[in-house]
Image 1 (cartoon, rainbow, N blue to C red):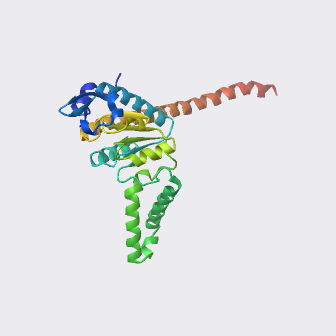
Image 2: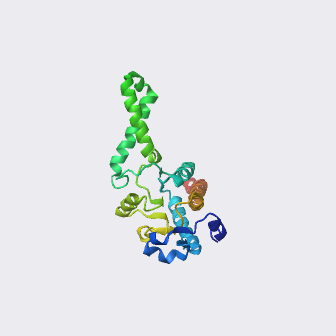
Image 3: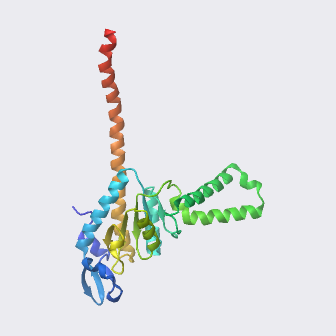
Length: 257
């Protein structure tokens, strides 16, 4: 069963592509028709590809790994940030810092620096500094937080990326390719779908379209987290039973001795 209906996709305007002259030829398999010089996306293809992407993300999250959500365009950033925070997933919604993946060790140092500033504020060290020094450090903390705040808890490279608009986030796509990190992305008619592993043909400009596709992806994340928790609880419940069984077997042998 599809995670989203054809009518829901239609109502959200997921099918509206770009002007015909702006199309990318490799999007041809995902285009249903042309109307008023605008390409119309095949929503049956969108449904299929969205299900595949959601299942892939669910599997990754269930295994305990993180998916990094990338969306810096204004129509998408608030939607992605709110949902990523809710599910405790890393995100980039302000600016993609070059080398965020390929130079991850250096990025981690900047995150550590951000944490050290927070410690200084917490233990009172900041109060011992001059007003000018405090101001400079506060500005640096604000700058680091704006760019790296969404990946503050990311201790290792993400297992996959979910991207809104691969043309805008082309640097993120290239870095993921270089490191063989799977990419899942909304791909409009002006983009090359072969650049990502799980392309979802969809309007990546309209807020309603972004919100609907993101909602399905986030539901998959939630399902993955729930199934992981369920499996862990089942394992924890099984452990005492195994201990009891071992004890029961060992007792008669102990009595013979």
